[in-house]
Image (cartoon, rainbow over the protein chains, first blue to last red):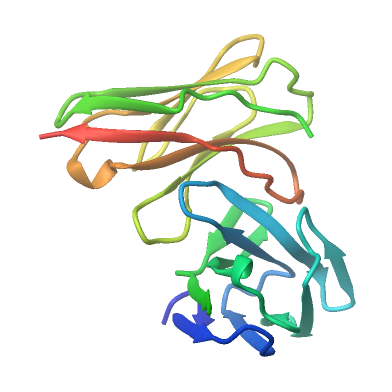
Length: 110
Length: 109
């Protein structure tokens, strides 16, 4: 099993729908992150969590919310999806040695 | 956040060494220099990191200037599988990564 698992891998949803992207990790790390990547661009930080009771906004948190259900689980929600949220979403964990990223969720909002 | 400057893209021939430069003139004493790479259709992966001394691992070497204002990632013998976007990032321990645009490395067969 992968250290950081994201589900689903691909998703197509309609404008206005609520959608949740899930992330689980087996690294035992306290710190978890959600990034989005648009075609040809770098990754931008949406939300991050340094432990179960700590949630912080990143560079582009508008339109998103997160839930840290346990040390191993960090989910990202789009309350009312819009087409410009079409992107590749990555979850990551970190410790003092570095980051581990998931394989990504490709989300298309039509 | 301290910033890094990297070339937008570079090319190298297969089986030759590749030197990827990064400038970070505003680096602070507590910043670690990290390198990540992102292969096509994958999440970024850790390559190497260092503080002051040069570092080697199975993937690459990191050469850090004496004044720490620049660094170079060295791939000793590039293969086609090394074609990726390489990100040079400054991180204080336990900090969050803010990505720049990185260097897109093309490997020519």
